[in-house]
Amino acid sequence: IQEKKDRPELVAKLTENVHQAKVTKALVMASQGNVSEGRALINTLKPTLPSELATLADFKLCQILIQTKQFEEATISAEELAKLPGLPLQLLQEITQFGYESLSNEAEPPKKLALALANLAAIASSNRPTDPVPLDTQAHLLALAGDLDQAIEIEERALSLDDGTYQS
Image (tube, rainbow, N blue to C red):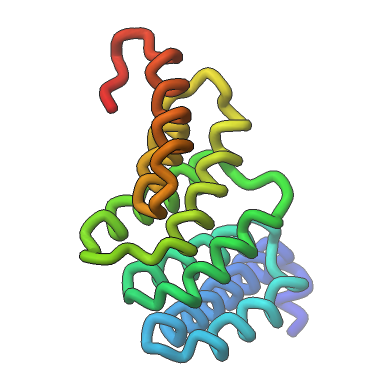
């Protein structure tokens, strides 16, 4: 115990490793169908987690739920993500692109999930208003959700921002 007190950086690293292991356990639980238990564990851990790890856990949970085709739970997860302040743009783009690619392979994409992901793409777009990529992703997700008029309008905005390097 005395050695731990003398080495605060070791204690910090061990604490970080424990947090990561617990988050991993929660994500594995969710991927195996124990979504409510996995989500509950993440929510229990959040007050003790560094904010970046808590946000990453939320994003990874949503991604796992999409990947394992637990679409109702993924919709809830995406809606919860949209409520978080200061979402990292890279994670927003990653989850919306992943969601689009996953849902576009479905014979009947879940509309509510596509709309929830389109909302996340809109948040990404608001953070980078001159970048056509989040707009394009948002348009594709809206099309999957069946909102073709809005999808066309947003795709036209994406194309208007194109500097010649962007391809829809």
